[in-house]
Length: 422
Image (tube, rainbow, N blue to C red; front, side, top):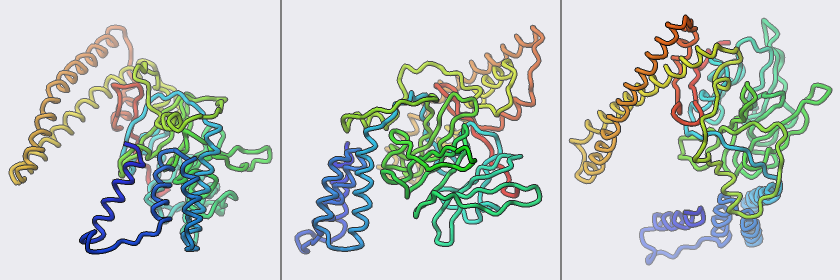
């Protein structure tokens, strides 16, 4: 269903809920407000041409100065979207996975215990959009997002001088709205902003360091990295194989998708001709026939690892993943069964269907676990017979991290939070 149809349905529900009876009370909604609803739906659906026309019409009919300022801002974003459609990139998609928006950043292939939860000395007032600071152990500099006296989050820079921090320096490209998740990756500074040239929500921007050591003007990375939704936390993986970012497009309210793309050293931009093509591009759907990719170096920290240890670790991770999935499924079944007796007849019918479906999954998962255990034991015996020694300390360290997607094209490994006292 398109966003336009969804918005029309939503408007109907809101109007019905607003009054006891449409027959007993005459509604009077300004025409420009109806136009605004249509324009927002067009914009969310990537139809920026129609959005520009509808916002312009709403602006002509609106006399409220406060609302006019808001309409002008949205009109500008739709014009930006129309302009940005002329220079889109087409990265190759490796994987896409949904995570909770509260801890999605822990699934990036970055050094363990380097995300520091606020409040901390760099960010004493964290926000739901930016609850952590990236500060790896031993780093001599930090870039972070922090609220100013007006409550707007800007990007700051400071150096660790050993026994103290240098005075925070606010980056000069700060806008009148929030900037979050700054990351230096591959010699470039990436961050997300709501206030710079963009198409609404958080867009992703990149800066390059000049010969004088200062960062240049930020530029919007464009479609499909930016969108009318919230897009942020762009990095290039430490091994140089992948580009990764997060977005809440096509997600539920409490989740975000992490997109893993093949790294392109010299990306080529081109125009997108139709709305449908732009929608498809920004969905970033992984191909169905995706072959297994070797992402072991993206998963690991910068230190190289023995191939045999990596092989053993992956097999052990598969065993652990299956155990966790079976355990999680059993917990869900226990919860459903506990509520079943006190549920209404209609709820019981729905719960019974869920219970049957979840129970049907258990035998298959248990068979997979038996096979994975046998495979791990065979690998141990083969290593023993050939005198191969396993770096068990590394395997044990990795075993504390939740592993997601081992069975698919890319493995997401959950990192641990570091101490806020640093």
